Length: 141
Length: 141
Length: 141
Length: 141
Figure 1 (tube, rainbow over the protein chains, first blue to last red):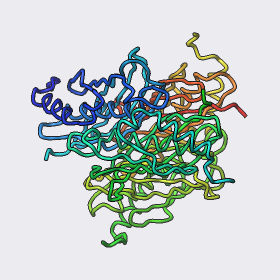
Figure 2 (figure 1 turned 180 degrees about the vertical axis):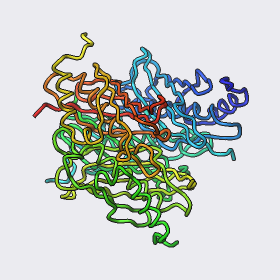
Figure 3 (figure 1 turned 90 degrees about the vertical axis):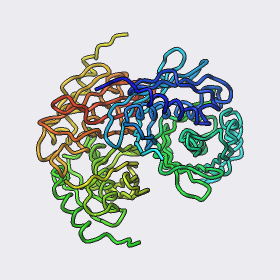
Figure 4 (figure 1 turned 60 degrees about the vertical axis):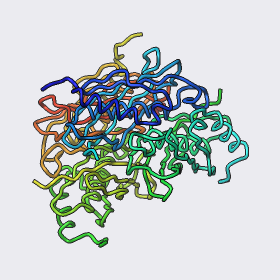
C-alpha cells in the first residue's frame, strides 16, 4: 500500500480548509498533512479566549475536530468528502501560551466510518485535551 | 427548594459570559438564563462557517458547551466557577439558516460534578446536534 | 408514516435478543418493544454486582447498549441488522435495588447511522445512567 | 517520584477485583498491574457472546472500564476508592477468538479526576475497541 498522500488529495484538503470561514477567522493553519495524520495550529488572541483568558474549550475542540476530519479524509478514496459524526473531548488542563497544536491520527479507517484520535498541546507540548472522533465519508456533491 | 436563580448568580454568569472573548467574537448571546437551564444563540456569518457554508461543528459545539457550563454553574453554591471536564457531541444534520440556538439543561447536579444535556437547533427548530457534558465546580480564585 | 413496528421486525428483534448468550446469562429481558423505543430489564444478583454490591457499570451499560441497538433496528428497513459504532455513558448514581430498567429511544434515524439516547433507572425510577449511542445498519448476512 | 505500585495498593486492587461478582461470573482476571497501567483478560464462552457469537460489546466495555478504574486507582493516594464518572467506547471490529485483553493507561491523574485510555485487543492483538474514561476518587467508606 502506498502510504504517501496523493497530490490530489493534499490539494483537496488544503482547498477545503481554505473554504472554512471559521478556521481563517481564528487564523488556524495546517502545519502537517500526511496520510492518516494532520496537525493544525491556532495562535492565541483575546478572540479565542474564555473568561479567564485561556484558550476557549470550543477553539481547542474546533481545531482538533477539523484535524481529525482531514486525517480521516486523507485515507479515503478520491471523490469523497468527510463529515464529523460525533466526537468526545476530555479537557485536561487550561491551555495557555501563544499557540495550541492539534495532532490527529487515524485509528481505524473503515469502508464507511473512520475513527480518529486527536491530542491538543500547548506551546510547551503539554497535553491539554484529548479527542476520540467518528468520521463518515460521503460522495462529493 | 427555591428554583429561582439568585440575582447574584445571574450576574456572575452574565459577567463571566461577557469576559469570554470568543463568545463576543462570534456574536453569541445568552437568551435565557434559569436555574438549571441556559439558552445561547449564535447568528450566522461566513466567519462561523465550514467548507460548505454551514455552521461549523466547532461553533455548534462551542455554544452548547458554554450553555452547559452555565446551566451547571446556575445550580452551584455562590463562590464557585465551572470548568468543562469533558463532553460528547453527535452532529445530526447540517446546520443552516440565520442562527442556531443551544439549549442546555442539568441532568444531575452532584456535589462535585454536574452532568448536563444540550441540544442545538437551527432556525426552523430542527435538532442539529446533541451534547452530553460533565462539568466540575471549582472555588473562585 | 406507519408508526407501528411490523410483526416481522418485532420477531427479528426477539430472535436476535434470544441469541445473545450474554443477555440470557444475566437474565435480561425485553419488556417493551415499539418503533423507536425499547426497554430492557435486568434483575439483581451477585453475578451482576461490582465491589460494593451495586449493579456493575458494565451491566448497566450492556443493557442500555442493547436497548439502543434494537431501538435503532426497529426503525430500519427489513433485511438489516444493527451494530454499535460507539457510545458514551455517564454514570449518575449507584444502582441499587432488585432490578434496573434501560429505556432507549431513537433521536435521529438516518440512512446509514442512527443516533439513540438511553436512560437507565433503578427500581425506584431514579435515573442511574444516561447513554448517547451511534448505531449503524448493515445488510443481514 | 516512586513509579512502583505499593504492596498495599496492589492488594487493595486485587481485593476489590475479587469482590466484583460480575468479573468472576465472566471469568475475567487481572494479568498486569502497574502504577498507571492495568490489563484484564476475559476468555470466550457463549455466556459472553452477542447474537452472532462474537464477544458482546457490553463485555468488551465492562473489562476495559474496570481496567481503567484500577489504572486510575493505582495512581491515587491510600484510602481512596474509584468510581467511573463516564466513558466513551468506539467498537472498531468484531471481537472473535478465545479471549480479549483490555489494556488501560492513565492519561492524566488530577487531584479529583483521572482520565484514562483503554484499548481492547483480540487474541491476534487486533484492536477491537478503544475507550476514553473519566474516573473520580472518593474516600473509602
